[in-house]
Image (tube, rainbow, N blue to C red; front, top):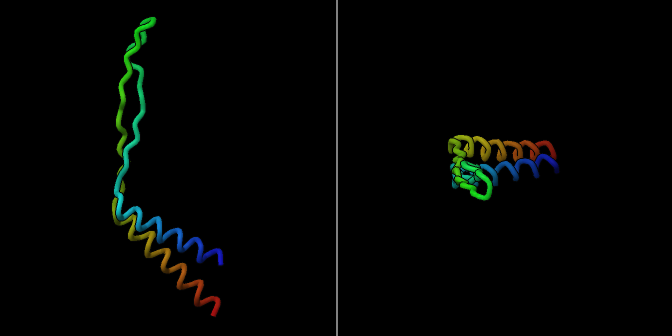
Amino acid sequence: MKTKTIGLAMIILGIVMLLYTSFNYVTTENVVDIGPLQINKEVNHPVKWSPIIGIILAVGGVVLIVASNKREA
């Protein structure tokens, strides 16, 4: 039962990684801090991955589910 859950999670994660191949997060950096004067800069940090990773995860999830079904039968 646990391998089916892991397999299903891998399939869902693989599909999401195929649909969204990157995301950004923003941090705020302090550029100037002179007494009451503060100048901040927002910096984008893109995180990208290959769609092949999503395919590998989805296929691995299917293999886990099929293997657990054969083991139960």
